[in-house]
Image (cartoon, rainbow, N blue to C red; front, side, top):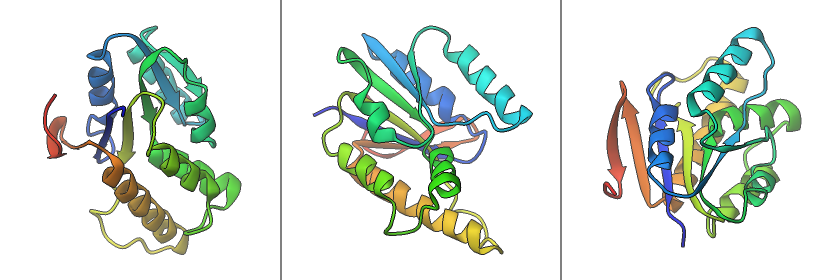
Length: 176
């Protein structure tokens, strides 16, 4: 079975850079599944920088909602796919599909796919549970859904890395 690595941490902690470095260490065809939507100038700039950083080392698949379909469209000869990132994807699902706990088939389909991934996966997600309880219902819902998604992904992962100020800390599994 293909290895799954989850990389989590705070915003701007180095998660994406770590994911790209891990994927580049795996020989063969590499895929990158981008979940971000360019909804404002700041996000467009962030997307541009991410594209520039990975260059042409990856086949890029842009999919803001259906990760199962995106992973099914990874080239058959791909050795690894980076999914960046689950928290952006979750925000998209909440915005476009009104995702709720226990009622989000896209999350269920993604988690089921992790039981038999098409290739090695490096999955990026923000750790949102280390802060205070959010004051709004929508923010609490996002935190709850994100926590469940991260826990279920980590349970299925062979390795979990927590990024702290650009430093990878292995939480589960060992170094390759």
